Image (cartoon, rainbow, N blue to C red; front, top):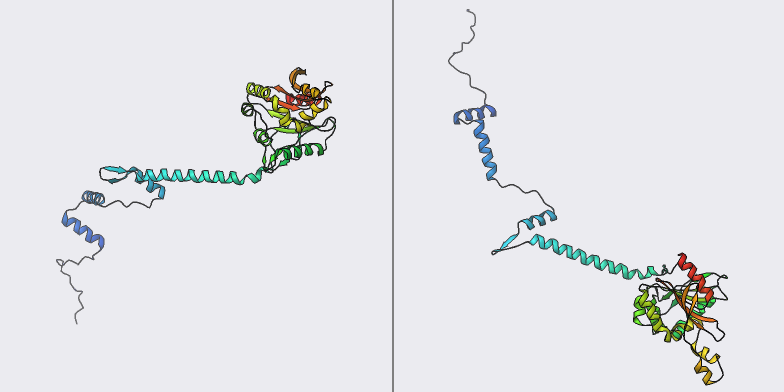
Length: 314
């Protein structure tokens, strides 16, 4: 039996190629005569035709976008974004103002823990004298006098007794109004708000006022104008009564009417002082400007000297 011969292959018969994605693409490119350059150009044109997807934006970004590209209404444009921003700012300011005044109103309870600012370098602070807003003038004078007399103080000591009306520190204007004084308006405007009432431990408790001055000329002329009513207005706080003094000068009507209750000029420690004297020549009441920023009202020369030294040192 003859040996088995291997099958013969026709050289002209080509094997079918295995199809792949790359071979298919290459075949199409070859048939259509497509180059890489043509592909790049086509891709570029496709991207130009497709709309660009806008990424998500925040409220502020959208608002700014609307500001730049406002909506059109007829022939006019309305900047809705700008209007929105301005409205937001106005609302924020309005809320801030409400919060400020709300906190300020509630803060009245906090004021109770604070003392007014008298000249702390002049006198140590003591407990406050609290007046009711509804107190009449006689009750106010009695409360202040009683507190001054009951407060313990060392010899030559100086204490400030802050005065409150209700829960708030009393300003000079508040106190003068409560006492129904006839101090001229020019004087009230010429003095600062932080009036200081206190006592000096000299022969008991000698009361005093220290009042800051903002306009010396008006304060000086205002005090002179007030002199005719000053003793009746605030004298009782200092234990000085024009009526009692007049009656104490004599036993007849003529002697009483002839008594001069006018304040007179005197020099104390090189300062011009306006003082009221009794019939023996003793000072009962005085006021003076220790400088153009400070007014002192008290009852005697020793207290004035002590306060003058401290106000000038402070």
